[in-house]
Image (cartoon, helix red, strand yellow):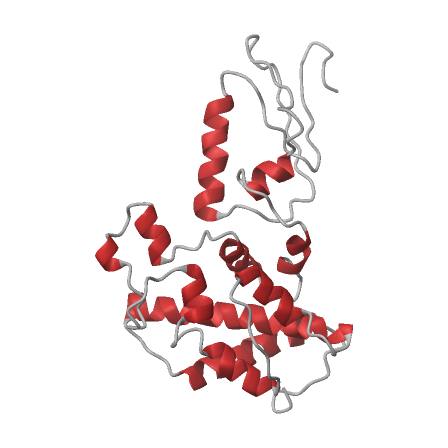
Length: 244
């Protein structure tokens, strides 16, 4: 049993930010983690026991900012409705993390690396050879090579649509198709995540391994991984792969 002479703080669900002479170092630590690794997940319970803190160390909440805001926003507004969309048991955590970073513009695209002074401006051109700067919106929605994968996915699904030019709107548009029953929304969500994952993997293959796959090959990967994700995590998924 903890002695009454010992001071402790129990933080459950929310991580508190503190005002003390340590506050600045804590801020830079969390900001660095969020900015570079997007260390955000559905942390359901985190418990910290701080025993015998220094006498000159005063721990207390900083304003109305709670731990979810510290971890998830990094100082920027967050659409909380996207949290439940991104994290789902049918989607691997590494893919959800990739999409979360995409929605927060934290992926190491060449324009982001140039902004962090990792790359020179001359090295920020899209690896597809289209001549444009490799920004997030360009890579996933505008590039004639990478973004053309969406066209092939639409053909596979037998759907005609005008895609949004904004990543978040594109996700919402794709995953909540008007005219389709709600039970299909999860399927569309998984397919959207699989497409984003396939685009990012193809981009990395070209950058780091100099391997190029045709869009028809990449879309087959989208079909396979989306099928496997649903088959392994959804008990009532009755499709066979040749029907998928």
